[in-house]
Image (cartoon, rainbow, N blue to C red; front, side):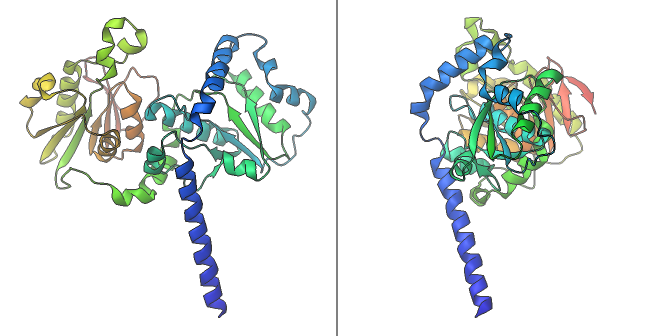
Length: 356
Protein backbone atom coordinates (compact mmCIF):
# COMPACT_ATOMS: atom_id res chain seq x y z
CA UNK A 1 0.00 0.00 0.00
CA UNK A 2 2.80 2.41 0.85
CA UNK A 3 4.49 1.75 -2.49
CA UNK A 4 1.22 2.35 -4.33
CA UNK A 5 0.65 5.57 -2.36
CA UNK A 6 4.12 6.81 -3.29
CA UNK A 7 3.53 5.97 -6.93
CA UNK A 8 0.19 7.76 -6.78
CA UNK A 9 1.78 10.84 -5.18
CA UNK A 10 4.59 10.88 -7.76
CA UNK A 11 2.07 10.54 -10.60
CA UNK A 12 0.04 13.38 -9.09
CA UNK A 13 3.13 15.61 -8.86
CA UNK A 14 4.09 14.81 -12.47
CA UNK A 15 0.59 15.62 -13.69
CA UNK A 16 0.51 18.90 -11.77
CA UNK A 17 3.94 19.80 -13.14
CA UNK A 18 2.79 19.17 -16.70
CA UNK A 19 -0.41 21.15 -16.12
CA UNK A 20 1.61 24.11 -14.78
CA UNK A 21 3.90 23.96 -17.84
CA UNK A 22 0.89 24.01 -20.15
CA UNK A 23 -0.60 26.96 -18.26
CA UNK A 24 2.68 28.86 -18.71
CA UNK A 25 2.62 28.16 -22.45
CA UNK A 26 -1.04 29.14 -22.82
CA UNK A 27 -0.45 32.40 -20.95
CA UNK A 28 2.46 33.33 -23.20
CA UNK A 29 1.79 36.55 -25.06
CA UNK A 30 -1.37 37.53 -23.19
CA UNK A 31 -1.96 41.04 -21.92
CA UNK A 32 0.41 42.66 -24.43
CA UNK A 33 -2.01 45.27 -25.80
CA UNK A 34 -2.60 46.89 -22.40
CA UNK A 35 1.16 47.00 -21.82
CA UNK A 36 2.11 48.48 -25.19
CA UNK A 37 1.65 52.21 -24.50
CA UNK A 38 3.35 52.24 -21.06
CA UNK A 39 6.17 50.15 -22.51
CA UNK A 40 6.76 52.55 -25.38
CA UNK A 41 6.71 55.55 -23.02
CA UNK A 42 9.20 53.86 -20.73
CA UNK A 43 11.51 52.97 -23.62
CA UNK A 44 11.34 56.59 -24.74
CA UNK A 45 12.47 58.12 -21.47
CA UNK A 46 15.13 55.45 -20.93
CA UNK A 47 16.62 56.18 -24.36
CA UNK A 48 16.63 59.91 -23.61
CA UNK A 49 18.17 59.67 -20.14
CA UNK A 50 20.34 56.55 -20.53
CA UNK A 51 23.65 58.45 -20.85
CA UNK A 52 22.82 61.36 -18.58
CA UNK A 53 24.20 61.90 -15.09
CA UNK A 54 20.70 61.74 -13.59
CA UNK A 55 19.75 58.38 -15.09
CA UNK A 56 20.71 56.16 -12.14
CA UNK A 57 18.75 58.40 -9.77
CA UNK A 58 15.53 57.57 -11.64
CA UNK A 59 15.50 54.10 -10.09
CA UNK A 60 14.20 53.21 -6.65
CA UNK A 61 16.64 50.30 -6.65
CA UNK A 62 19.61 52.69 -6.78
CA UNK A 63 18.27 54.73 -3.87
CA UNK A 64 17.66 51.50 -1.96
CA UNK A 65 21.29 50.52 -2.51
CA UNK A 66 22.49 53.87 -1.16
CA UNK A 67 20.55 53.25 2.07
CA UNK A 68 21.19 49.51 2.41
CA UNK A 69 24.76 48.81 1.36
CA UNK A 70 25.78 46.74 4.39
CA UNK A 71 24.46 43.27 3.41
CA UNK A 72 27.64 41.65 2.13
CA UNK A 73 27.09 38.42 4.09
CA UNK A 74 23.32 38.10 3.65
CA UNK A 75 21.89 35.23 1.60
CA UNK A 76 21.07 35.72 -2.09
CA UNK A 77 19.14 32.45 -2.44
CA UNK A 78 15.85 34.27 -3.03
CA UNK A 79 17.12 36.68 -5.66
CA UNK A 80 16.25 36.25 -9.35
CA UNK A 81 17.14 38.08 -12.57
CA UNK A 82 14.89 38.42 -15.62
CA UNK A 83 14.74 40.11 -19.02
CA UNK A 84 11.53 40.44 -21.02
CA UNK A 85 11.54 39.19 -24.64
CA UNK A 86 10.51 42.28 -26.61
CA UNK A 87 6.89 41.56 -27.63
CA UNK A 88 7.13 43.98 -30.56
CA UNK A 89 10.14 42.25 -32.12
CA UNK A 90 10.81 39.11 -34.15
CA UNK A 91 11.70 35.80 -32.52
CA UNK A 92 15.46 36.24 -33.08
CA UNK A 93 15.38 39.56 -31.22
CA UNK A 94 13.21 38.08 -28.46
CA UNK A 95 15.62 35.20 -28.00
CA UNK A 96 18.48 37.68 -27.64
CA UNK A 97 16.54 39.37 -24.82
CA UNK A 98 15.84 36.06 -23.08
CA UNK A 99 19.45 34.94 -23.44
CA UNK A 100 20.68 38.24 -21.95
CA UNK A 101 18.55 37.67 -18.85
CA UNK A 102 19.75 34.09 -18.51
CA UNK A 103 23.40 35.09 -18.94
CA UNK A 104 23.38 37.98 -16.50
CA UNK A 105 21.62 35.87 -13.86
CA UNK A 106 24.66 33.60 -14.05
CA UNK A 107 27.09 36.50 -14.10
CA UNK A 108 25.56 38.05 -10.97
CA UNK A 109 25.37 34.58 -9.35
CA UNK A 110 21.63 34.61 -8.69
CA UNK A 111 18.73 32.58 -10.10
CA UNK A 112 16.99 33.16 -13.41
CA UNK A 113 13.28 33.96 -13.75
CA UNK A 114 11.57 33.10 -17.03
CA UNK A 115 9.32 35.51 -18.92
CA UNK A 116 7.44 33.77 -21.76
CA UNK A 117 7.91 34.71 -25.40
CA UNK A 118 5.12 36.79 -26.91
CA UNK A 119 3.88 33.86 -29.00
CA UNK A 120 2.47 30.73 -27.37
CA UNK A 121 3.58 28.81 -30.45
CA UNK A 122 7.24 29.87 -30.08
CA UNK A 123 7.14 29.38 -26.31
CA UNK A 124 6.20 25.75 -26.83
CA UNK A 125 8.55 25.28 -29.79
CA UNK A 126 11.73 26.52 -28.06
CA UNK A 127 11.08 24.86 -24.71
CA UNK A 128 13.19 27.38 -22.81
CA UNK A 129 10.61 27.45 -20.02
CA UNK A 130 11.66 23.97 -18.85
CA UNK A 131 13.00 23.89 -15.32
CA UNK A 132 12.49 27.63 -14.79
CA UNK A 133 10.18 29.59 -12.51
CA UNK A 134 8.28 32.39 -14.18
CA UNK A 135 8.09 35.94 -12.87
CA UNK A 136 4.31 35.52 -12.55
CA UNK A 137 4.76 32.43 -10.39
CA UNK A 138 7.30 34.15 -8.18
CA UNK A 139 5.03 37.16 -7.68
CA UNK A 140 2.33 34.79 -6.39
CA UNK A 141 4.90 33.46 -3.92
CA UNK A 142 5.45 36.92 -2.47
CA UNK A 143 8.38 38.10 -4.58
CA UNK A 144 8.53 41.73 -5.60
CA UNK A 145 9.75 42.90 -8.99
CA UNK A 146 12.53 45.50 -8.83
CA UNK A 147 13.63 47.42 -11.92
CA UNK A 148 17.33 47.88 -12.56
CA UNK A 149 18.82 50.36 -14.98
CA UNK A 150 20.14 49.47 -18.40
CA UNK A 151 23.91 48.95 -18.31
CA UNK A 152 26.85 48.46 -20.63
CA UNK A 153 28.33 44.99 -20.08
CA UNK A 154 31.81 46.34 -20.93
CA UNK A 155 31.57 49.22 -18.46
CA UNK A 156 32.99 47.95 -15.17
CA UNK A 157 31.51 50.82 -13.19
CA UNK A 158 27.98 50.20 -14.47
CA UNK A 159 28.21 46.43 -13.99
CA UNK A 160 29.56 46.94 -10.46
CA UNK A 161 26.65 49.26 -9.72
CA UNK A 162 24.14 46.56 -10.69
CA UNK A 163 26.02 44.03 -8.57
CA UNK A 164 25.91 46.39 -5.58
CA UNK A 165 22.18 46.95 -6.05
CA UNK A 166 21.60 43.19 -6.10
CA UNK A 167 23.67 42.74 -2.94
CA UNK A 168 21.65 45.46 -1.20
CA UNK A 169 18.53 43.29 -1.56
CA UNK A 170 20.18 40.13 -0.16
CA UNK A 171 17.92 38.33 2.30
CA UNK A 172 14.76 39.48 0.53
CA UNK A 173 12.50 37.88 -2.11
CA UNK A 174 13.20 39.88 -5.25
CA UNK A 175 13.08 39.49 -9.03
CA UNK A 176 15.35 42.03 -10.73
CA UNK A 177 13.91 43.08 -14.08
CA UNK A 178 16.25 44.76 -16.54
CA UNK A 179 15.13 47.40 -19.00
CA UNK A 180 13.94 46.32 -22.43
CA UNK A 181 16.64 45.18 -24.84
CA UNK A 182 19.47 44.91 -22.33
CA UNK A 183 22.37 43.99 -24.61
CA UNK A 184 24.58 40.93 -24.29
CA UNK A 185 27.13 40.63 -27.08
CA UNK A 186 28.50 37.07 -26.80
CA UNK A 187 25.20 35.20 -26.98
CA UNK A 188 27.02 31.89 -27.40
CA UNK A 189 27.82 31.90 -23.67
CA UNK A 190 24.57 30.01 -23.03
CA UNK A 191 24.78 27.56 -25.97
CA UNK A 192 25.04 24.43 -23.85
CA UNK A 193 22.05 25.32 -21.70
CA UNK A 194 19.69 26.40 -24.47
CA UNK A 195 20.64 23.36 -26.57
CA UNK A 196 19.70 21.08 -23.68
CA UNK A 197 16.36 22.86 -23.32
CA UNK A 198 15.59 22.88 -27.05
CA UNK A 199 16.46 19.25 -27.78
CA UNK A 200 14.57 18.00 -24.71
CA UNK A 201 11.43 20.08 -25.36
CA UNK A 202 8.27 17.91 -25.46
CA UNK A 203 7.31 19.23 -28.89
CA UNK A 204 10.48 17.76 -30.45
CA UNK A 205 8.39 14.61 -30.85
CA UNK A 206 6.27 16.56 -33.34
CA UNK A 207 9.18 17.81 -35.48
CA UNK A 208 9.19 16.89 -39.15
CA UNK A 209 12.16 17.43 -41.47
CA UNK A 210 12.43 17.18 -45.25
CA UNK A 211 16.11 16.23 -44.94
CA UNK A 212 17.32 12.75 -45.82
CA UNK A 213 19.50 11.58 -42.94
CA UNK A 214 21.66 9.65 -45.39
CA UNK A 215 22.77 12.92 -47.02
CA UNK A 216 25.00 15.74 -45.81
CA UNK A 217 22.54 18.63 -45.64
CA UNK A 218 23.66 22.25 -46.04
CA UNK A 219 21.17 24.98 -45.12
CA UNK A 220 21.59 28.50 -46.53
CA UNK A 221 19.60 31.36 -45.03
CA UNK A 222 19.26 34.43 -47.26
CA UNK A 223 17.44 37.27 -45.59
CA UNK A 224 15.14 39.07 -47.97
CA UNK A 225 11.52 40.13 -47.26
CA UNK A 226 11.51 43.45 -45.36
CA UNK A 227 15.20 44.03 -46.17
CA UNK A 228 14.57 44.13 -49.93
CA UNK A 229 11.30 46.06 -49.60
CA UNK A 230 12.96 48.86 -47.63
CA UNK A 231 16.41 48.82 -49.24
CA UNK A 232 15.89 52.13 -51.07
CA UNK A 233 15.11 54.05 -47.89
CA UNK A 234 18.83 54.61 -47.14
CA UNK A 235 18.18 53.34 -43.65
CA UNK A 236 21.52 52.25 -42.16
CA UNK A 237 19.79 49.61 -40.06
CA UNK A 238 18.47 48.07 -43.28
CA UNK A 239 21.50 48.46 -45.56
CA UNK A 240 23.88 46.96 -42.98
CA UNK A 241 21.87 43.73 -43.05
CA UNK A 242 21.62 43.28 -46.81
CA UNK A 243 23.88 40.72 -48.50
CA UNK A 244 23.77 40.04 -52.23
CA UNK A 245 23.30 36.65 -53.87
CA UNK A 246 26.98 36.83 -54.81
CA UNK A 247 27.93 36.71 -51.13
CA UNK A 248 25.98 33.50 -50.64
CA UNK A 249 27.28 31.95 -53.88
CA UNK A 250 30.84 32.48 -52.58
CA UNK A 251 29.90 31.28 -49.11
CA UNK A 252 28.40 28.14 -50.57
CA UNK A 253 31.55 27.49 -52.61
CA UNK A 254 33.61 27.83 -49.43
CA UNK A 255 31.28 25.44 -47.58
CA UNK A 256 31.36 22.87 -50.38
CA UNK A 257 35.15 23.00 -50.50
CA UNK A 258 35.37 22.70 -46.72
CA UNK A 259 33.00 19.71 -46.75
CA UNK A 260 34.35 18.10 -49.93
CA UNK A 261 35.01 14.80 -48.17
CA UNK A 262 31.28 14.44 -47.46
CA UNK A 263 29.17 12.26 -49.75
CA UNK A 264 25.71 13.02 -51.14
CA UNK A 265 25.67 16.73 -50.32
CA UNK A 266 22.29 18.43 -50.64
CA UNK A 267 21.71 22.19 -50.45
CA UNK A 268 18.57 23.78 -49.01
CA UNK A 269 18.04 27.49 -49.62
CA UNK A 270 15.75 29.23 -47.10
CA UNK A 271 14.50 32.67 -48.06
CA UNK A 272 11.50 34.68 -49.23
CA UNK A 273 10.55 35.42 -52.81
CA UNK A 274 10.37 33.37 -56.00
CA UNK A 275 12.80 30.92 -57.56
CA UNK A 276 13.63 33.28 -60.44
CA UNK A 277 15.35 35.60 -57.91
CA UNK A 278 17.87 32.86 -57.09
CA UNK A 279 18.69 31.43 -60.53
CA UNK A 280 22.46 31.62 -59.83
CA UNK A 281 22.13 28.80 -57.33
CA UNK A 282 20.85 26.32 -59.92
CA UNK A 283 24.41 25.70 -61.06
CA UNK A 284 24.95 23.70 -57.86
CA UNK A 285 23.89 20.08 -57.72
CA UNK A 286 21.06 18.92 -55.47
CA UNK A 287 19.67 22.39 -54.69
CA UNK A 288 16.27 22.60 -53.00
CA UNK A 289 14.47 25.95 -52.86
CA UNK A 290 12.57 26.40 -49.59
CA UNK A 291 11.02 29.78 -50.30
CA UNK A 292 8.31 31.23 -48.09
CA UNK A 293 8.42 28.18 -45.84
CA UNK A 294 6.92 28.80 -42.40
CA UNK A 295 9.15 30.53 -39.84
CA UNK A 296 9.29 27.66 -37.36
CA UNK A 297 9.81 25.06 -40.06
CA UNK A 298 12.70 27.09 -41.54
CA UNK A 299 14.17 27.64 -38.07
CA UNK A 300 14.00 23.92 -37.32
CA UNK A 301 15.77 22.96 -40.54
CA UNK A 302 18.55 25.47 -39.88
CA UNK A 303 19.05 23.96 -36.43
CA UNK A 304 19.31 20.41 -37.78
CA UNK A 305 21.48 21.13 -40.82
CA UNK A 306 24.87 19.42 -40.97
CA UNK A 307 26.27 22.77 -42.13
CA UNK A 308 24.57 26.15 -41.86
CA UNK A 309 25.35 29.34 -43.77
CA UNK A 310 23.85 32.26 -41.86
CA UNK A 311 23.02 35.79 -42.98
CA UNK A 312 23.22 39.06 -41.06
CA UNK A 313 20.06 38.18 -39.24
CA UNK A 314 19.12 37.09 -35.74
CA UNK A 315 16.73 34.63 -37.39
CA UNK A 316 19.63 32.46 -38.59
CA UNK A 317 22.12 33.38 -35.83
CA UNK A 318 19.83 31.90 -33.18
CA UNK A 319 19.45 28.53 -34.97
CA UNK A 320 23.25 28.59 -35.29
CA UNK A 321 23.49 28.73 -31.48
CA UNK A 322 21.37 25.58 -31.34
CA UNK A 323 23.00 23.86 -34.32
CA UNK A 324 25.54 21.12 -33.52
CA UNK A 325 27.13 21.07 -36.97
CA UNK A 326 29.39 23.49 -38.87
CA UNK A 327 28.45 27.16 -39.11
CA UNK A 328 29.63 29.58 -41.83
CA UNK A 329 28.94 33.07 -40.53
CA UNK A 330 29.51 36.73 -41.55
CA UNK A 331 32.36 38.17 -39.49
CA UNK A 332 30.77 41.63 -39.40
CA UNK A 333 27.84 40.94 -37.10
CA UNK A 334 26.45 42.48 -33.92
CA UNK A 335 26.83 39.33 -31.81
CA UNK A 336 29.92 37.24 -31.14
CA UNK A 337 31.07 33.77 -32.17
CA UNK A 338 32.90 31.05 -30.24
CA UNK A 339 36.57 30.67 -31.11
CA UNK A 340 36.42 27.07 -32.30
CA UNK A 341 36.45 25.02 -35.52
CA UNK A 342 32.65 24.72 -35.73
CA UNK A 343 32.31 28.45 -36.43
CA UNK A 344 33.92 29.68 -39.64
CA UNK A 345 33.89 33.43 -40.24
CA UNK A 346 33.48 34.79 -43.75
CA UNK A 347 34.62 38.06 -45.29
CA UNK A 348 32.19 40.61 -46.72
CA UNK A 349 32.44 38.88 -50.11
CA UNK A 350 31.65 35.45 -48.65
CA UNK A 351 35.17 34.03 -48.71
CA UNK A 352 36.78 32.40 -45.69
CA UNK A 353 38.55 34.75 -43.29
CA UNK A 354 39.78 32.33 -40.68
CA UNK A 355 39.29 28.77 -39.52
CA UNK A 356 39.84 28.38 -35.78
